[in-house]
Image (cartoon, rainbow, N blue to C red; front, side, top):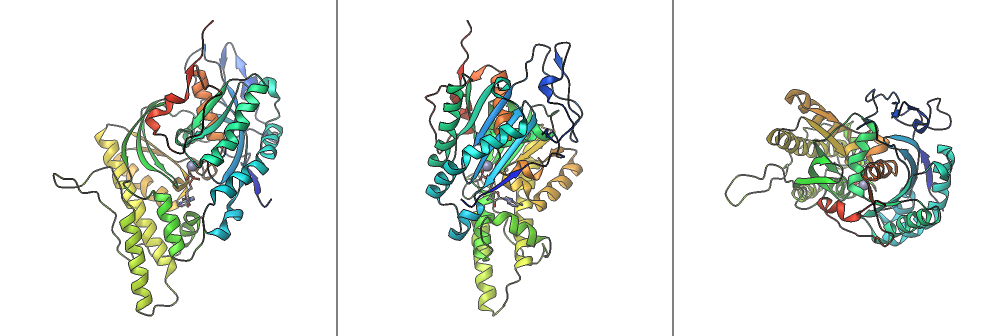
Length: 405
Ligand code: KG4
Ligand code: ZN
């Protein structure tokens, strides 16, 4: 099976591994309060109160085209293994769901073993098992979900199903353990583009969303149009750095309101995608060969970055939120990172992006979300199913309260 296993860099923020001299935080308990690990992003481990117990989670993520397993202790990564299927799907120009499911089946066992080995812990140290259960490709989700439920049952551990998008939000806690709600989260992935008011664990309100394509989907479709292959985001990002972002004026995509004006937070990327198609047709009709792909990529990326940034700033200001966290694969985009950082600095907003390895799909973010849910007394039933769609506002439907004896 042609998959690439990759491991998070041990020198990344908040990563502990067997070659790393930092101690496992589970073993750093002092006077009833757990001490912190120094991180690049923030010095202190967030401790809600003296009775708080940290949770170590084995987490699995198989919602799309990455087979991932990780061991996370609250907001610290003990290990993170990601087996990318990109090479498998590349010849098809996109993800083939059945191929994704079969590849998860072939790879998940090795990924789990590698995650446990790298974390150097045994089952006695694990407090719970988590797996992404929604949203995503149902066949792919079922692989991780079934494995997670089985491991939880066999080892007598609580099981937690995790909402994939809540995982992307929690990637920010791994990078910045001092992050505390409320804050605004811009979720930008292959399937979603939303502005989320994060009130606490499991408490989310969607303030804005895309009316058509997700931002990542737009990157992928435009890359295909330009003959750049799949996945489109990283290749457009790379090319954009060599092009002129002002070369071609493109529409940002506004949602008209019946009473006049535009929706301040909702976005649309299908018009931008069509504008790119018309532009490429026009250039070809005029005999432009080769196409100025770097300028096209740079202009497209700058337009997406402007469109998202404008909505983030307007939304944060309207809701009085001073912190913005970004999550999802498109959070890796250098144009968006630069543009949003600059606008946030001008507006006095704190904006945070996870490191690149935590922007795209990984199991560490799933474990981090599960650890918080477990600490709140949430756990899922073993009858929990996979769901291709689930609104983030319904996350708490995944959990049953722990029975108190
Ligand atoms: O979060 P993610 O790994 O999977 C989903 O949950 O969808 O996001 C994948 C998406 C793809 O559309 C990919 O093209 C996009 O994230 N992406 C990027 C970059 N890296 C990944 N988009 C723009 N710039 C990037 N550097
Ligand atoms: Zn994702």
